[in-house]
Length: 126
Image (cartoon, rainbow, N blue to C red; front, side, top):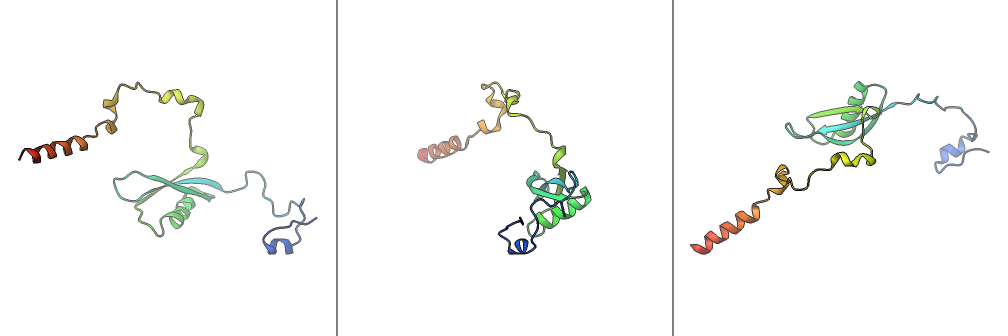
């Protein structure tokens, strides 16, 4: 029985389902690289996607063509996906912190409402 595909060219090729023709050996595929892009000097690199390439040098070329061709970009990083180390969700306790240490979080210093209130008070007194 031949492969039936939505692509009529594949169906017309009459490829047998159990054939190994054209199949690559395991681990004979291209490496996957994660791409990080910096849009402006001094800003953080941000993950923008992945590319497949045989070497890191070609990964840079592919990343440039894929992610930096049209938009603004000043720097690219590519990292083998296999080299990225992740934490497990079961280890979430390593991120727990003491909740009363708000002074360590810059998000806790929201003073714009206080500044606006002060300015309004000054206007009312004038």
